[in-house]
Image 1 (tube, rainbow, N blue to C red):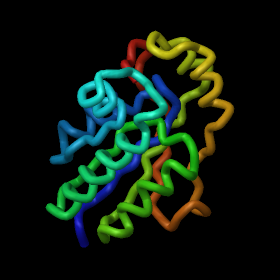
Image 2 (cartoon, rainbow, N blue to C red; image 1 turned 30 degrees about the vertical axis):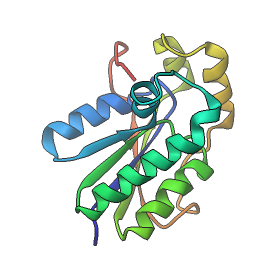
Image 3 (cartoon, rainbow, N blue to C red; image 1 turned 30 degrees about the horizontal axis):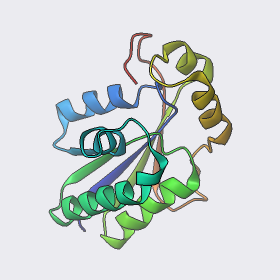
Image 4 (cartoon, one colour; image 1 turned 120 degrees about the horizontal axis):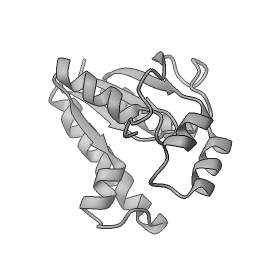
Length: 154
């Protein structure tokens, strides 16, 4: 076995980062975030043409950390089976224990909390959103109903 991979799933502003903050208080883990890489390595909020490089960097980070038997939390919306499938493939390649944590928060709540994305982008993501199921991959799926307050940051 080579580490543990936790793939966060949920709309923007659903409570994923708050869940991660709580999890980190009790568990030794490293968070890999495409948003962090995008903003701190490429110095952009979103720019589609950097996605291939972005995915290469995040995949490499995840592989290195799993090879060191670390627990890795992938922070992101991960709203489609395709996106989750890429992370699941990496976890399987590395022999990791894989878990999906789905933060189930209503679209209305996410929209109310939203202060970052254009509402049109949030609506688009909600329309594209695919709830994780065991049909995607034989991995553990934990569904958490949003219990974070309205001032939650994610």
